Image (tube, rainbow, N blue to C red; front, side, top):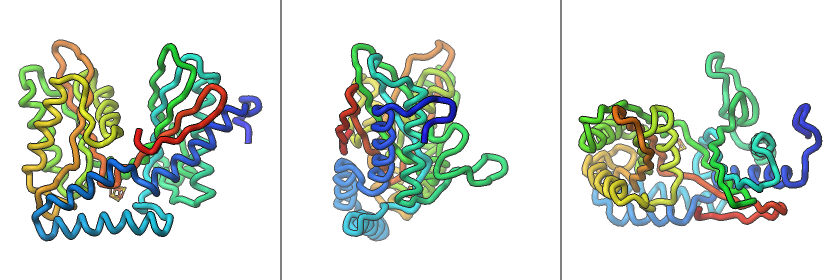
Length: 302
Ligand code: SF4
């Protein structure tokens, strides 16, 4: 169906729609290899009996999903896409958005998937995982390219509910950032289905810090920030968070987080925003690369 008042759907728009429909389902069923490896390694190093049992169950859960071509978790999440659009890509972002929206609808209806999206006040369902401003799309525009990268990161509510923001003051420094992240994860306990990925966004403004935290959880597990200062913070936080003893599903153990990723932006001299976004063990993501000619390459590991 054509977008209302937007004219006919062009072939490349259909390609993006098909890619979105494929990515949403693929992400929900087939978790990336780096996540599988991290869960396997977590099971090996966990020493608590309840923790090992939880990790055994998680690994078995993934195997059953593979065998039965089924979802790894019943929560199909809220559909979130990250788009990196080259300046020469022959489709306006308004059209890309419509294509992602239709792809999300199709995936939900055709698979079918659970529809999670509701009006925030009335709590009435708004359709097949779409609604006002849903799906959520993050944009990055790049010069010197004519292609599109799109990554689908369905976000489960259990982990999304464990999102935190604090406007630290500059005098709080790095110690204040660490304390806030630690307090947030200790407060969250077992609610976000640990062990997962802790995303931390620092700098920018309040809204941008949270955006960065969300970007951080969408990175392949264990990748490090190219800024050595930030990478050191990632290492420190990863160690500290795993000393909390929260463990898998909050039942106690050595493995509370699979990783901690930090994204940063420069900020105002009187600001020190810190945002925390949690991604559960089912850290689903799937990517596609669309050329200007409409060819698609799917990428399991991006
Ligand atoms: S937080 Fe993640 S693992 Fe837990 S129910 Fe939601 S999607 Fe599933």
